[in-house]
Amino acid sequence: MPKKISPTGKTAARSLLSARPLPAAQPKTSSARVLKRPVPAASVAKAKKVFKSFSLSKFAGNGTPSNYVTAGQSPAETQRRKISQHLDNLNTADAPTRAMTLALPDATIKKLLPSFNAKAGTIDLGELMSLIQQNMKGTEFYAKGNPTLNRLAIQSHVQRIIDSVKQEVKK
View 1 (cartoon, helix red, strand yellow):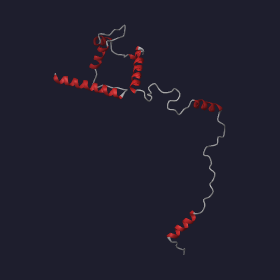
View 2: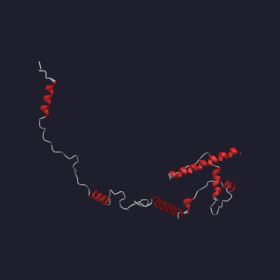
View 3: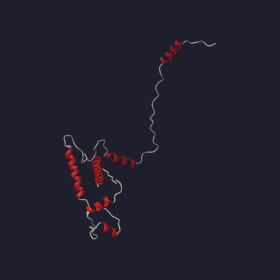
């Protein structure tokens, strides 16, 4: 029959085991694979070329962007400068980028848009906008870009809808 060991005896036996010295540490082996062939010279040259101008800087290479506001500089002034610069770019843009194509039969164009000049290919903008507004169905209004400007444009559009509903009620 085996000898019974009390719980304190087990604890004592464990403490004797833990007092033994640990085996000598084995030297660590590198987890990297050993290459069987050398890296091609073209790859090495390409890597050197790519990392030659590498920088961890936030604005590496070209310096700060044109819209960057340095410490002590007025954000409003930087904003005005960028807006003016963008407006100048729009003014110098070619006319074809500011055009719209209408696909209507000639008879319809002559009837709906009397200011149409076939030789110049122009129509009075006010006349065109009123035609578009008359033929809009529902609330076809979409905007992209600056969220603040979008919100203001939508508020303006909603106000026009409310005003038109009020005018219809008065009639």
